[in-house]
Length: 97
Image (tube, rainbow, N blue to C red; front, side, top):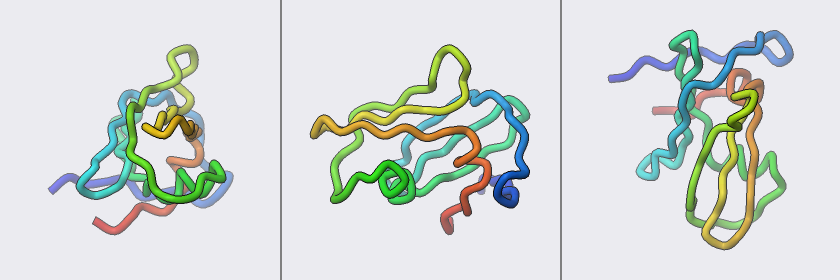
């Protein structure tokens, strides 16, 4: 079983570039890895809620902001978009595995 990093209290994490992000459809979470090797999980519902998106729609694609690697973007099949910053990932509570 993969070990996930513990989130930091709000406002205390330090910037680190994102190395990878992937959507795990079976668990409805995003798995985000950083250059340090730390890996975090963020609930899909939390990303949708933070972006003011309602309802359910299928994830079409996910990619990292190429210039700064400071966040990732999500495109949905219904045309909606969501973004997620590095600090949201590092400070959000991990969903239960």
